[in-house]
Image (cartoon, rainbow, N blue to C red):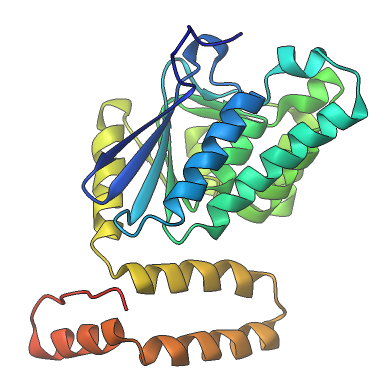
Length: 263
């Protein structure tokens, strides 16, 4: 399925220092077509250079957050190169989220499955409506969710991830929160306020400090304990010498709000 002529598959609007990206393929349950993957990649490339934006929200129009790869597109070819290229582009797009200096929040209003679940797991934070559901159901159609597995196993415990991957069953929002796939679960009518409030809170921090912290968080997680402490000590020493750290400490001691300079 394709969007109507001249209708973009991805929308962006900026509210203050928060960028909101909206998956806009509601008729296709926001399946991650090659076109949508490329649109997300292009937007992340722009955001990586955007000094005015301090937080990013990913949301979706319609009845699904995203049901994963577009199976009509997948079924259109039996060529190895076609499929490898599609998955490579999708993986690069997912990794771009981790490399962004800004934290990215998934706003999940309803179902997120397969690569859609992968997108949620990849985002730095996720807030879900009470009736949202999650799954990696590829096993049910003979196509194991191997690339979604990469993000899922880094977001939740191994046994919880393996159960999702082996059964393909839907997981409700409360369970998703319990296993660490999402941070918060709220009534659907409070979802926007909850996500907007979280984004504004993050956007009010020093952009330099947040960027340093986000990069360090993911890098240290891949190291052994001793190496992680060595790396973190180097990062924190550099951070201590930044202007914003001095400003933050001075403001705390003086009991006044800090004025960030992002350097």
